[in-house]
Picture: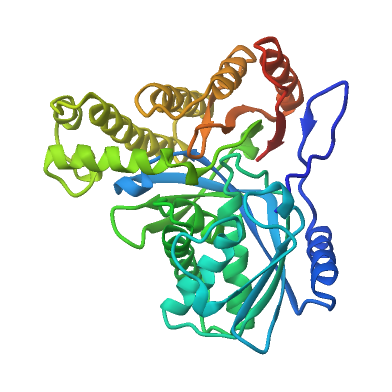
Length: 411
């Protein structure tokens, strides 16, 4: 993966410009030739994602409403004559783990594999565990999805790896169900080989969401149900402004797993299997307030209210009330989501708070941190004609608060 910044100007905000498909394919193919000495057989790609609302709800049986970026991760690949994986990234030196070319035999892939290659190896391990066998692969990666920004860079890599294996292993998978099966393998690989108890949101988002839509994911069952939903933002002159604070996060540092355990503690206190059961029952918040442990109570309160906000935003997107009223309501839900993630879930950061505060002062309809938190990016719902001006005000606001100027992209 790579964290490329383009469109930088000393006189204005810095923008991350997505690569075209031919450009991304050429970049990944160049890495492949450089590292392996021959031409790849295929080049595939998967997008990053931005979650409109529904944060930390997936592993609690809740709902989420993600969409995808134009920014994508590209994988150039070819089959080998053995059962060995060789993987290389254009910018592996900037990631945790080894650089150059990493080589591992399929039968040596094991849980808690260190470094970034685990995201690739985990997908192949999971596919093989589901009975899909194929030859070894040479894989080269390049990407314009911002890394560790809460924008699904890991899921984009996993999704592209799964698509490459599907083609080169000749897997008889077609249609939406094929994408769902590949997403399930990505989830299993990350949870086992990478060793992070992530929810299922990101792989399903990057592999199932159609461009220009949001994907209403309901995790009450496994696999989750998925319903494409038009975003309607462009028709009304709006867009999502993504604010990358440049403060990276890592789900492997233990804080994400800690939130999972805290939610499990809340479930144990309530005598339920998942917090979704509480969200769907009468007097949900009253039940939450009865939890004695304050941390478990706060975590549960975020999940319950975030599920309510996700339902609200989905209803407003497809509603029939005047557009301005609906988008104002959606914007308020975004601000409330951020407050809940900051106070009840404790996953925000000074930089993310400064970005959201600056977006509010700049007139954004709504804003919140996006992704798992602990750093990364925020989003703001803004008028598209004012995106440049809003970005300039946000950048200046963050600099005035003592932080580095962020970079931006739009959805």
